Length: 311
Image 1 (tube, rainbow, N blue to C red):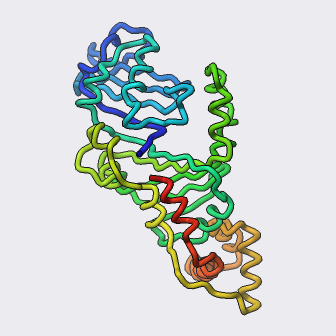
Image 2 (tube, rainbow, N blue to C red):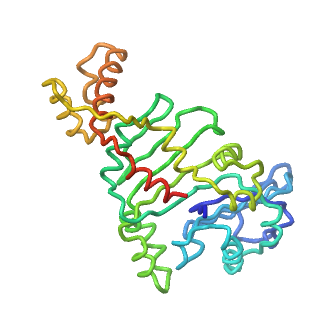
Image 3 (tube, rainbow, N blue to C red):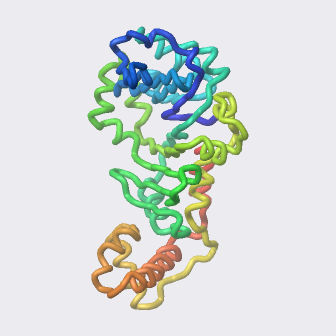
Protein backbone atom coordinates (compact mmCIF):
# COMPACT_ATOMS: atom_id res chain seq x y z
CA UNK A 1 0.00 0.00 0.00
CA UNK A 2 1.38 3.37 -1.01
CA UNK A 3 2.03 5.83 1.83
CA UNK A 4 2.86 9.51 2.12
CA UNK A 5 4.69 11.58 4.71
CA UNK A 6 3.36 14.79 3.19
CA UNK A 7 0.49 15.60 0.87
CA UNK A 8 -1.00 18.77 -0.62
CA UNK A 9 -4.69 18.57 -1.50
CA UNK A 10 -6.54 21.14 -3.61
CA UNK A 11 -10.31 21.23 -3.17
CA UNK A 12 -13.28 23.51 -3.93
CA UNK A 13 -13.56 26.50 -1.59
CA UNK A 14 -16.90 25.14 -0.35
CA UNK A 15 -14.95 22.36 1.40
CA UNK A 16 -13.76 24.79 4.11
CA UNK A 17 -15.62 27.10 6.47
CA UNK A 18 -14.72 29.23 9.44
CA UNK A 19 -11.75 30.95 7.82
CA UNK A 20 -13.30 34.37 7.34
CA UNK A 21 -12.77 36.84 10.19
CA UNK A 22 -10.61 34.21 11.84
CA UNK A 23 -7.53 35.61 13.63
CA UNK A 24 -5.69 32.33 12.93
CA UNK A 25 -5.66 33.23 9.22
CA UNK A 26 -3.42 35.87 7.71
CA UNK A 27 -5.33 37.95 5.16
CA UNK A 28 -3.82 39.38 1.98
CA UNK A 29 -5.83 42.16 0.31
CA UNK A 30 -5.66 44.14 -2.91
CA UNK A 31 -8.01 46.89 -4.09
CA UNK A 32 -10.07 46.48 -0.90
CA UNK A 33 -10.64 42.82 -1.69
CA UNK A 34 -9.28 39.89 0.29
CA UNK A 35 -7.35 37.77 -2.21
CA UNK A 36 -5.96 35.15 0.15
CA UNK A 37 -6.44 33.64 3.59
CA UNK A 38 -3.43 31.77 4.95
CA UNK A 39 -3.04 29.52 7.98
CA UNK A 40 0.33 28.00 8.84
CA UNK A 41 1.78 25.99 11.71
CA UNK A 42 4.85 23.80 12.01
CA UNK A 43 3.96 21.29 14.72
CA UNK A 44 2.36 19.27 13.38
CA UNK A 45 2.95 20.67 9.92
CA UNK A 46 -0.26 22.15 8.48
CA UNK A 47 -0.61 24.86 5.85
CA UNK A 48 -3.94 26.05 4.45
CA UNK A 49 -4.44 28.67 1.74
CA UNK A 50 -7.88 29.87 0.66
CA UNK A 51 -8.04 31.85 -2.60
CA UNK A 52 -11.60 33.14 -3.13
CA UNK A 53 -10.90 34.41 -6.66
CA UNK A 54 -9.94 30.89 -7.72
CA UNK A 55 -12.72 29.25 -5.67
CA UNK A 56 -10.28 26.80 -4.13
CA UNK A 57 -8.51 25.82 -0.93
CA UNK A 58 -5.17 24.02 -0.64
CA UNK A 59 -4.47 21.92 2.42
CA UNK A 60 -0.94 20.64 3.00
CA UNK A 61 -0.13 18.45 5.98
CA UNK A 62 2.33 15.80 7.14
CA UNK A 63 1.81 12.37 8.61
CA UNK A 64 2.50 13.85 12.05
CA UNK A 65 -1.12 15.02 12.05
CA UNK A 66 -1.83 11.39 13.06
CA UNK A 67 -0.04 11.81 16.39
CA UNK A 68 0.82 8.43 17.90
CA UNK A 69 -0.19 6.83 14.60
CA UNK A 70 2.46 8.76 12.69
CA UNK A 71 4.31 5.51 11.76
CA UNK A 72 1.24 4.56 9.66
CA UNK A 73 1.86 7.61 7.44
CA UNK A 74 -0.92 9.01 5.23
CA UNK A 75 -2.67 6.30 3.21
CA UNK A 76 -5.98 5.27 1.67
CA UNK A 77 -7.19 3.75 4.94
CA UNK A 78 -6.64 6.79 7.17
CA UNK A 79 -7.12 9.85 4.93
CA UNK A 80 -10.48 10.56 6.62
CA UNK A 81 -8.82 10.30 10.02
CA UNK A 82 -6.14 12.80 8.93
CA UNK A 83 -8.74 15.36 7.90
CA UNK A 84 -10.79 14.74 11.03
CA UNK A 85 -7.69 15.32 13.16
CA UNK A 86 -7.37 18.73 11.52
CA UNK A 87 -11.01 19.48 12.38
CA UNK A 88 -10.40 18.38 15.98
CA UNK A 89 -7.98 21.30 16.33
CA UNK A 90 -11.09 23.51 16.37
CA UNK A 91 -9.59 26.33 14.30
CA UNK A 92 -11.76 25.94 11.19
CA UNK A 93 -13.84 23.23 9.59
CA UNK A 94 -13.17 20.95 6.63
CA UNK A 95 -15.83 19.00 4.78
CA UNK A 96 -14.03 15.67 4.85
CA UNK A 97 -16.39 13.88 2.48
CA UNK A 98 -16.24 16.64 -0.15
CA UNK A 99 -12.46 16.84 0.00
CA UNK A 100 -12.06 13.10 -0.50
CA UNK A 101 -14.64 13.08 -3.28
CA UNK A 102 -13.58 16.22 -5.19
CA UNK A 103 -10.03 16.98 -4.07
CA UNK A 104 -6.91 16.49 -6.17
CA UNK A 105 -3.32 15.95 -5.08
CA UNK A 106 -0.93 18.71 -6.19
CA UNK A 107 2.24 17.63 -4.35
CA UNK A 108 3.26 14.66 -2.25
CA UNK A 109 6.13 12.79 -0.61
CA UNK A 110 5.82 9.06 -1.26
CA UNK A 111 7.44 7.41 1.73
CA UNK A 112 8.44 4.05 3.11
CA UNK A 113 10.36 3.04 6.23
CA UNK A 114 12.40 -0.17 5.94
CA UNK A 115 14.01 -2.02 8.82
CA UNK A 116 17.47 -3.53 8.88
CA UNK A 117 19.00 -1.97 5.76
CA UNK A 118 22.79 -1.91 5.51
CA UNK A 119 22.71 1.86 4.98
CA UNK A 120 26.45 2.22 4.35
CA UNK A 121 26.42 -0.45 1.66
CA UNK A 122 23.38 1.11 -0.02
CA UNK A 123 24.91 4.60 0.09
CA UNK A 124 28.26 3.46 -1.30
CA UNK A 125 26.54 1.56 -4.08
CA UNK A 126 24.28 4.41 -5.17
CA UNK A 127 27.02 7.05 -4.92
CA UNK A 128 29.22 5.06 -7.31
CA UNK A 129 26.59 3.86 -9.78
CA UNK A 130 25.05 7.04 -11.17
CA UNK A 131 23.76 6.33 -14.68
CA UNK A 132 23.89 9.61 -16.58
CA UNK A 133 24.50 13.37 -16.25
CA UNK A 134 20.72 13.83 -15.86
CA UNK A 135 20.96 12.32 -12.38
CA UNK A 136 23.01 13.43 -9.40
CA UNK A 137 23.60 11.61 -6.14
CA UNK A 138 24.94 13.55 -3.19
CA UNK A 139 25.32 13.16 0.54
CA UNK A 140 22.71 14.82 2.72
CA UNK A 141 23.12 14.98 6.49
CA UNK A 142 23.03 11.35 7.55
CA UNK A 143 21.87 10.10 4.17
CA UNK A 144 21.91 10.67 0.42
CA UNK A 145 19.77 12.44 -2.19
CA UNK A 146 19.14 11.15 -5.71
CA UNK A 147 18.00 14.01 -7.93
CA UNK A 148 16.97 14.25 -11.57
CA UNK A 149 18.52 17.54 -12.64
CA UNK A 150 16.05 18.87 -15.19
CA UNK A 151 14.53 22.35 -15.32
CA UNK A 152 10.93 21.35 -15.97
CA UNK A 153 9.15 20.51 -12.71
CA UNK A 154 7.00 17.77 -14.24
CA UNK A 155 10.14 15.74 -14.97
CA UNK A 156 11.93 16.39 -11.68
CA UNK A 157 12.43 13.64 -9.12
CA UNK A 158 14.07 13.82 -5.70
CA UNK A 159 14.59 10.71 -3.60
CA UNK A 160 16.05 11.10 -0.11
CA UNK A 161 17.38 8.10 1.81
CA UNK A 162 18.29 8.59 5.46
CA UNK A 163 18.42 7.12 8.97
CA UNK A 164 14.95 7.80 10.33
CA UNK A 165 15.85 6.75 13.86
CA UNK A 166 18.59 9.40 13.98
CA UNK A 167 16.37 12.00 12.29
CA UNK A 168 13.74 11.59 15.02
CA UNK A 169 16.29 13.03 17.46
CA UNK A 170 16.30 16.41 15.73
CA UNK A 171 14.78 19.22 17.77
CA UNK A 172 11.73 19.62 15.54
CA UNK A 173 10.88 15.95 15.98
CA UNK A 174 11.58 16.05 19.70
CA UNK A 175 9.07 18.91 19.91
CA UNK A 176 6.54 16.72 18.10
CA UNK A 177 7.23 13.75 20.38
CA UNK A 178 6.76 15.93 23.47
CA UNK A 179 3.13 16.47 22.45
CA UNK A 180 2.32 12.74 22.41
CA UNK A 181 0.98 10.71 25.31
CA UNK A 182 2.84 7.60 24.18
CA UNK A 183 5.89 9.02 22.43
CA UNK A 184 8.08 6.02 23.29
CA UNK A 185 6.01 3.78 21.00
CA UNK A 186 6.78 6.09 18.09
CA UNK A 187 10.47 6.24 19.00
CA UNK A 188 10.62 2.44 19.25
CA UNK A 189 8.96 1.99 15.87
CA UNK A 190 11.66 3.96 14.08
CA UNK A 191 14.58 2.08 15.66
CA UNK A 192 16.86 0.66 12.96
CA UNK A 193 14.60 2.12 10.24
CA UNK A 194 15.85 3.70 7.01
CA UNK A 195 13.45 6.10 5.28
CA UNK A 196 13.08 6.39 1.50
CA UNK A 197 11.16 9.53 0.55
CA UNK A 198 10.26 10.50 -3.03
CA UNK A 199 9.32 14.15 -3.47
CA UNK A 200 6.92 14.97 -6.34
CA UNK A 201 6.14 18.66 -6.83
CA UNK A 202 3.75 18.79 -9.77
CA UNK A 203 0.56 17.09 -10.86
CA UNK A 204 2.22 15.74 -13.99
CA UNK A 205 5.10 14.30 -11.95
CA UNK A 206 2.59 12.54 -9.69
CA UNK A 207 0.69 11.04 -12.62
CA UNK A 208 3.86 9.89 -14.34
CA UNK A 209 5.41 8.40 -11.21
CA UNK A 210 2.25 6.58 -10.15
CA UNK A 211 1.10 5.58 -13.64
CA UNK A 212 -2.34 7.16 -13.22
CA UNK A 213 -4.47 9.39 -15.42
CA UNK A 214 -6.07 11.53 -12.72
CA UNK A 215 -4.78 13.42 -9.68
CA UNK A 216 -7.94 12.71 -7.72
CA UNK A 217 -7.30 11.71 -4.13
CA UNK A 218 -8.79 8.28 -4.76
CA UNK A 219 -6.56 7.65 -7.80
CA UNK A 220 -3.41 8.74 -5.98
CA UNK A 221 -4.07 6.87 -2.73
CA UNK A 222 -5.07 3.67 -4.53
CA UNK A 223 -2.16 3.65 -7.01
CA UNK A 224 -0.53 0.23 -7.29
CA UNK A 225 3.07 0.80 -8.29
CA UNK A 226 6.52 1.28 -6.83
CA UNK A 227 7.81 4.70 -7.95
CA UNK A 228 10.75 4.61 -5.52
CA UNK A 229 12.06 1.48 -7.19
CA UNK A 230 11.64 3.08 -10.61
CA UNK A 231 13.68 6.15 -9.59
CA UNK A 232 16.56 3.98 -8.39
CA UNK A 233 16.44 1.83 -11.54
CA UNK A 234 16.48 4.94 -13.72
CA UNK A 235 19.29 6.70 -11.88
CA UNK A 236 21.86 3.92 -11.50
CA UNK A 237 23.54 1.47 -13.86
CA UNK A 238 23.47 -2.18 -12.86
CA UNK A 239 26.15 -4.24 -14.60
CA UNK A 240 26.22 -8.02 -14.39
CA UNK A 241 30.00 -8.05 -14.82
CA UNK A 242 32.44 -7.99 -11.93
CA UNK A 243 36.10 -7.21 -12.45
CA UNK A 244 39.19 -7.68 -10.35
CA UNK A 245 41.73 -4.92 -9.75
CA UNK A 246 44.99 -6.06 -11.37
CA UNK A 247 46.82 -2.78 -12.07
CA UNK A 248 48.75 -0.66 -9.60
CA UNK A 249 47.08 2.49 -10.96
CA UNK A 250 43.65 1.03 -10.26
CA UNK A 251 44.81 0.01 -6.82
CA UNK A 252 45.76 3.65 -6.18
CA UNK A 253 42.40 4.84 -7.51
CA UNK A 254 40.70 2.42 -5.11
CA UNK A 255 42.41 4.19 -2.25
CA UNK A 256 40.95 7.49 -3.46
CA UNK A 257 37.47 5.96 -3.79
CA UNK A 258 37.63 4.60 -0.26
CA UNK A 259 39.02 7.85 1.14
CA UNK A 260 36.02 9.76 -0.18
CA UNK A 261 33.50 7.03 0.59
CA UNK A 262 32.83 6.33 -3.11
CA UNK A 263 31.28 9.81 -3.40
CA UNK A 264 32.13 10.91 -6.96
CA UNK A 265 31.10 14.51 -6.23
CA UNK A 266 33.67 14.72 -3.40
CA UNK A 267 36.35 13.22 -5.61
CA UNK A 268 35.57 15.85 -8.26
CA UNK A 269 35.98 18.62 -5.69
CA UNK A 270 39.36 17.31 -4.57
CA UNK A 271 41.00 16.38 -7.89
CA UNK A 272 39.85 19.33 -10.03
CA UNK A 273 42.91 21.37 -9.03
CA UNK A 274 45.17 18.85 -10.79
CA UNK A 275 43.59 19.50 -14.20
CA UNK A 276 43.55 22.50 -16.50
CA UNK A 277 39.97 22.21 -17.75
CA UNK A 278 36.61 20.63 -16.99
CA UNK A 279 36.86 18.17 -19.87
CA UNK A 280 39.97 16.60 -18.38
CA UNK A 281 38.28 16.38 -14.98
CA UNK A 282 35.28 14.62 -16.50
CA UNK A 283 37.51 12.10 -18.27
CA UNK A 284 39.31 11.32 -15.02
CA UNK A 285 36.01 10.96 -13.15
CA UNK A 286 34.73 8.58 -15.80
CA UNK A 287 37.64 6.27 -14.96
CA UNK A 288 36.85 6.48 -11.23
CA UNK A 289 33.16 5.87 -11.89
CA UNK A 290 33.85 2.83 -14.07
CA UNK A 291 36.24 1.40 -11.49
CA UNK A 292 33.78 2.02 -8.66
CA UNK A 293 31.07 0.18 -10.56
CA UNK A 294 33.36 -2.78 -11.19
CA UNK A 295 34.12 -3.06 -7.47
CA UNK A 296 30.49 -3.50 -6.50
CA UNK A 297 29.01 -7.00 -6.21
CA UNK A 298 27.44 -8.29 -9.42
CA UNK A 299 24.66 -9.97 -7.41
CA UNK A 300 22.08 -7.23 -6.91
CA UNK A 301 19.49 -9.36 -5.10
CA UNK A 302 20.11 -7.42 -1.88
CA UNK A 303 19.22 -4.18 -3.68
CA UNK A 304 16.11 -5.66 -5.32
CA UNK A 305 14.99 -6.90 -1.92
CA UNK A 306 15.18 -3.37 -0.50
CA UNK A 307 13.38 -1.82 -3.46
CA UNK A 308 10.61 -4.41 -3.39
CA UNK A 309 9.87 -3.34 0.18
CA UNK A 310 9.41 0.24 -1.03
CA UNK A 311 6.08 -0.70 -2.66
